[in-house]
Image (tube, rainbow over all chains, first blue to last red; front, side, top):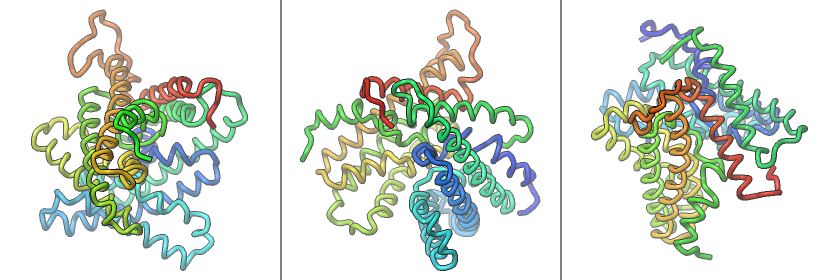
Length: 198
Length: 202
């Protein structure tokens, strides 16, 4: 359960660089495009996503191995996963409110949004399909979150500068955001070959 | 203020196309646009889920307590996605394998939740179903346009048939992720020029 398969560290770095959730899997695009106008906000959202992703990946791993597989409930997995994600987000929000009120003020508004972030459910589904063990899943969740954070921070930083320039008509906003993302994705292809996961 | 059926259709397919004008639902579907067949299946699946979850949510709109409506809507959507997933696994095993996790990700596709919140909450069941149906159709068209260019230039095929008659060199970039971003960016650029000429949207 802990030692078979691909080296977890390779999964970790690959999920940040070569199999980035946004740049190669197109996951979490909605909030990525709409909340990337400002670097600070984008970075906070990235942190929240990373946090939620680690927790949900661990919990969903447990639920998948201990409940879904033994009871043969594979056809219900989507419902279970989405409920767990919603519940985790709620619990993290309440815990943060009690324990880290400062952080809650900063990240609080994003937490409910994250429930419907495709990258969270996507990470869980990739984990199930690729049949990762516990350590692999943990590092995969962490890496995917960090990769998402990296991508949204980079885009927000570029867009902040872009706001000062004059763009062709109709390209402002989402249009240019997608094209920048395309260029970023091209740059990240440069990492391919260093680590590979399927 | 109720819309007529015709207005619902033109709004969803053209004026407020979910993918291009609202920038919704890009998440779970852009990844499958490298082949037209996959895009078609994905689009049809999404259309089915949107139409029927809009119908169901509209039927239950007075029965669902307002505070827990999000989770109820998510469960309704998830049930339909499970239907689509099982149907694809049973009848189109290859495509189901190729789509991988992206079928399940229809659950978090913002379009469905968006239509439920913005339309099905307040309108009659039949109209809501049409609204969902044509939101899905409009979105499928966008997916197919992107897939058309990616498959044609990347593989020299359309729907798996070889159309590379002049024997041009296929573009590897079109098969990879960046091409999808460039194409959708360009499509958004073109459509926002059609809809808001002279006025720039920030």
